[in-house]
Length: 198
Image (tube, rainbow, N blue to C red):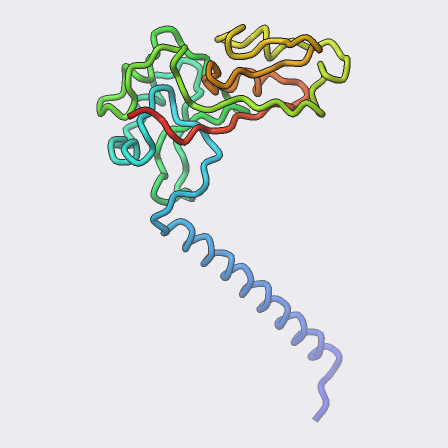
């Protein structure tokens, strides 16, 4: 027995919606599996100044938010529940709010567990700034000096070289992200350092 045009399109619509629903459920299962794994996702963030090595940091950090509340620049925030086993731990996302390497390091002073160790600004190892020369205004002959002028550790961490381009000195760069945050060309990003402190 044939079906009406209305029945045909109604059934077609139901079939399509069922397919969409199945796809959404599948994506959800992938997300749940990623969140339940024992391996933390690849880091796209920085730990606060003075963080000990990641494995020990995750054991020592109680997710108490004391360092978050102590930061006068609101640079430290907590990872959300989508990050599974590292959810709630403190991070710095420099393109949103960089670390200004406060002289008294209130975040470290606030940490009650030793997950953050007392560290002078010049010895902080959060990450390393990386400059995309092709996108940098300065290398294109345009006047720009934000990264060098506003760096808390200038000129040791970053300086202009003979051709006028900014050059990062990795051994002195704290990875605070001030340069990346201020760069109008968005030509700087911070590569997290995985080592941390012992």
